[in-house]
Image (cartoon, rainbow, N blue to C red; front, top):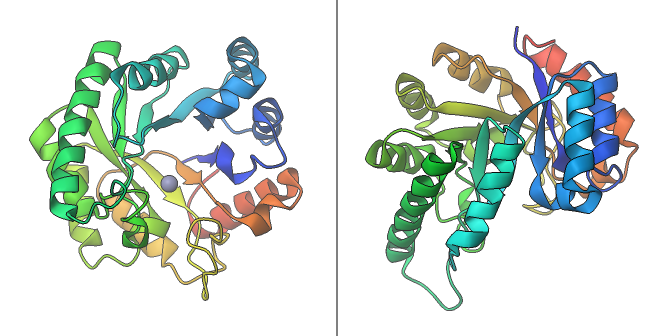
Length: 267
Ligand code: ZN
């Protein structure tokens, strides 16, 4: 059995961090995936003490980036906060091309170099980094790292302390997915598994993700690939959706938990 984690982004429009933590705790969830900007809204001390009161672990911490105009002090502040919250891993948000930039290959080289610098800081501070490749439709403005293959190669080159997160929304289309999940598993770098769904039609690539089961992704199939690769971590619900954001957060979570129980072997 694996467990369910909610990424705060799933309910952030109507639940501040403290409300979200309470909603997770009421549902018996043991871990959360949190955002630095949401911590800032409610205050670090309150966020930490509520987490401790509920006895919850932090799975993912969002995030370091974008990395195009990399400032090491900003990145280190995020890494230090992630360490303070004892996050299992910190998401890298790499960013897309610079203004007027068209050379994707050199943008990728630049980001790879910068990821190496962030990793130096992360190792010093004692937190793990997670690369989450984003769908190629957002390569221009959000992430020049689009595939698990590229992510694995970056991790191979950089060594320990960095791994990958597989988000079904971003990776479902990739014909290399089984091979690359196995490769990441073999290297011991599968840090997370994000679930949602790809709707037909998708009206907005950033804000129209589906609830698990409402779209066309083979969620059970991808979860099986993860398990075969040795992943026994959480199933993290991460739905960026104006539709689901407009609904009652408690209800959204209950529906998502139901869907997860139906699709995966989770409790
Ligand atoms: Zn994700």
